[in-house]
Length: 307
Image (cartoon, rainbow, N blue to C red; front, side):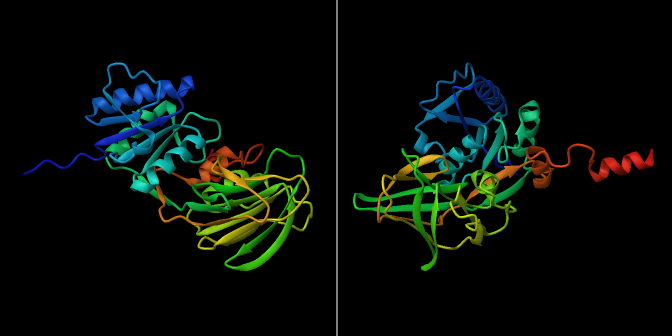
């Protein structure tokens, strides 16, 4: 009888080589994966010294092409970078949190080897996350970018607010005077959009948040629309203003007067892997510090009553 195929035979490691904690985890995981019979990839421009562990260096653009799993070590910024690499190749992403907040990277560094072994043995939960495509149409040509969290229009190199219009599925919505606008997926609803007063969307909800940044009019509030919407933003004339479009923290380009950016669903999504005991609401409680003070979770309250 033939042996069962190895799950996740080729694993790509992604992390910030300028962070000593990330480098330590990458080295540890490379050795561990090599010992488990996996082939390990890393970015060719990474300066991480993997020692005796055999690691194949690959150009960043091709890192996920031959991988079965991408492991992102760091914070949510690293997860967003890994998602953009993995999405075109339908490769799942696993996050190891060595950053600060960590909504997406939910495996802690203290038990990373045990958790990784669970994943390699097939004990995990799959979590599909929708992505956005932004197309900036300008006289100098079109630019396209993808985002897992959000696409942001923001003022650039000036202290003045922006005047811009929003259109959804070809219908005029509003004219805004603000510092910009965040268009966020359900995944990105806990990021920049949250600080703009937007709601938290459950990750499986097919919806988008449009959240103005510091609007001049108090009635200019965040709205939620279906995820299939085509959102068009047009910059209007205002003295000495400049704007740029940002996709997951990476600049797509400048949006000039009478130009537009169109934001819609991306053709591909990204699949995140979590341990089997993954609980989204537990992550919210931990990261947003819900239920602190004299309030206790139900299980803890029940235990006290039994005493």
